[in-house]
Amino acid sequence: MGIRCGIVGLPNVGKSTLFNAITASSQAAAENYPFCTIEPNTGIVPVPDERVKQLTSIVNPAREVPATIEFVDIAGLVKGAAQGEGLGNQFLAHIRDVDAIAHVVRCFDDPNVIHVDGTVDPRRDIEVIETELILKDLETLDKKLDAAQRKGKTGDAKARAEADFYVHLREHLTQGRLARYFPRTNEEEELWLRDMHLLTAKPVLYVANSDENGVIHGNAYIATVRAIAEKEGARMVPICAKIEMELIELPEEERAHFLRDLGLNEPGLHALVRAAYDLLGLQTYFTAGPKEVRAWTVRKGAKAPEAAGVIHTDFEKGFIRAEVMKFRDFIQLKSEAAVREAGLLRSEGREYVVEDGDVMHFRFNV
Image (cartoon, rainbow, N blue to C red; front, top):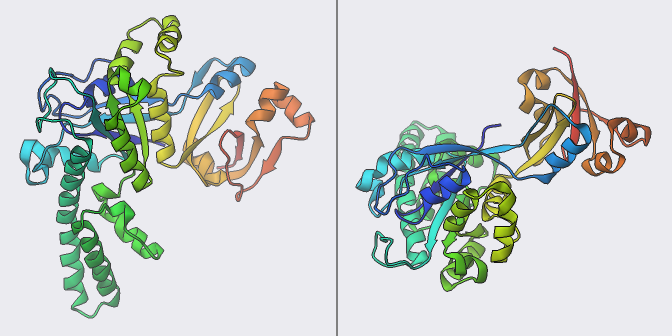
């Protein structure tokens, strides 16, 4: 399944540097002036998962394929973006196309890096971005509200209920609150909200981009972002985009030593990618055979036929059963035959709910 995460924030907060590090590339320009990025850059990023390597060491396949997320580097937004400031309408349209938002917040002082508002203030910066997203959502909502109200005047009870929903949602947004926190009471309301593709309904991950000292020891800016995230029930990942860029420029065999010298356990990008994956309510199952070991992405709570459909729609249509091994059993017993002999390979039907780490084979008929 294709997953897209948009990297947003004010100009000069480190979005493009972060994107370059995430994708281990230089395809996104990273210059010290606003609106350096105009067209969104995209990059496919593997989800760090040691289980793929562990399966490969046992199966010895021709290739291994990790799960992936597509990151989209969207140009910096500014105050007035919803009215078209700084090419805002174009940039906001790019956000509408992603599944989740990685909101990069500047958490470092550097007189040599221009801040679009002159000073570093994470709370203010977050509010600027959220306000612009809300204003754009109000434009979308007002069109839906007008249509529902006109239809409701004809006596259509469902249209009147829909209009009432939009009225209450509008009140919620105008109070500066995001659509994802608006309470829904039934599936119909869920559908009305989802069909609008509102920008503030998308799940958000805050990325506190700091300097080296901040990411190791913390600072007041990061603490501010963490407090905002905790209040919203959102996720927050502190990262130093500069360190991540330095890291990917090193030979792979030197990276672990570089991190140890800094007192870090792993690249911040690994934590970021995993957080984005989890933010979308995703999990991984595996297929393992002589041709390949592959990690497949499926939503949490998915049943076996849906998981089969991730590989090919024919697998879902003609689903018969799934043969399932638990990852820990496969690793411990070292082969599918041994798992089967131990009575730990299970044959599951259409109602089986896939668990993270399942090793699966599908039987189907089309």
